[in-house]
Amino acid sequence: MPYFTRLILFLFCLMVLVESRKTKRKRWTGQVETPKPSHLYKKNLDVTKIHKGKPQQLLRVDEHDFSMRPAFGGPAIPVGVDVQVESLDSISEVDMDFTMTLYLRHYWKDERLAFSSASNKSMTFDGRLVKKIWVPDVFFVHSKRSFTHDTTTDNIMLRVFPDGHVLYSMRITVTAMCNMDFSHFPLDSQTCSLELESYAYTDEDLMLYWKNGDESLKTDEKISLSQFLIQKFHTTSRLAFYSSTGWYNRLYINFTLRRHIFFFLLQTYFPATLMVMLSWVSFWIDRRAVPARVSLGITTVLTMTTIITGVNASMPRVSYVKAVDIYLWVSFVFVFLSVLEYAAVNYLTTVQERKERRLREKFPCMCGMLHSKTMMLDGSYSESEANSLAGYPRSHILTEEERQDKIVVHLGLSGDANAARKKGLLKGQMGFRIFQNTHAIDKYSRLIFPASYIFFNLIYWSVFS
Image 1: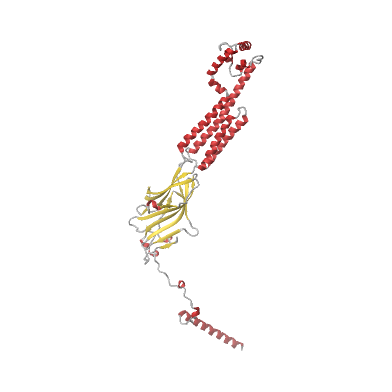
Image 2: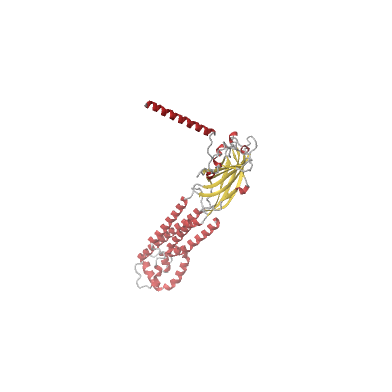
């Protein structure tokens, strides 16, 4: 009995399975009618979800060999170019280069991409189609680094028109070389250029040109740099020759930059000028204050050295003299000369004091004599001058005992007569006494140093500005 029951259950399940398969087969073939929904629940069909089969391929990319340029074997294909500069990111004097972000657009005609369109509208594609068709192989001459932006996807656009005209646009950041002349730095202007050229195709295969002349280059009005003023953007074109491959069309994006001077006035010129003026303060300090004048001179010299080192650290190691070097080194010379001026003053002061000490040792006592009668023995005269003033010829040199006796008697009796002779003698030796009088050296330095520095500044700024 249990065996019979199991058999019946197995046959029943088998019949149900067969009937379910028949029902599904009829639904697939459309033989089973589905009940029509009530008008209360009737909805419109979503036509976007209706599968209409495989769409027709308009561009016929697979039917052509796009490894060849358009019209291969015929005349050169013209490729127009226009550029929109988005930003000028940086200018590096040390590396002599610049970084620019731009939109680079190419225009050409490829009849292999022509398609029929009733509305005559173009089709736009992203960067995936670029790998399947022919595009111009334009590169940047003298570029150091360059890349195509890929956030959030590759910034590449391809637009194809029904007649086969193609617009190919990409967003690129490029760092290129710029030959700079720093002979007038920081009062200089620099002209840089970004050069475009076909890498493989000579002018016989590809003719690269600016699509709209000077209007092919557009810039953003908000472009600005911290150290430079952008004066002018313009385009040029010419042929470039390579001895091994031939002639190529080359396009140039030229721009002129003028450096802002205010930053360098604050950081370089004003500090250097103040250091020079500070070195002049020593001319008003007492000549006997040796620590004050020496420390002031050394401080100004070291400060000027620091300024010169800081400026050259941010500049390339060029083999010619820059305008800022002329100003800094002349300022350094003025500071150094102020130190030498005090060295001369101190030396002459020491020599003068040594002569006075010797003279006092030779005339130990002048008791009973008036001050007005003995002022000629203050050390400003030599021994022969003292003999002359005392009434003796220079050729007649007295002994020590005779000089002490006779000169005192002579000064005591005829001091008034010798006053006129002393005045004439001072006029003849005025030039020599300037160097002996240390106060006179400081006095003349107070005028000569500022006047010379002002004259230098007038010549400097008239030449380089």
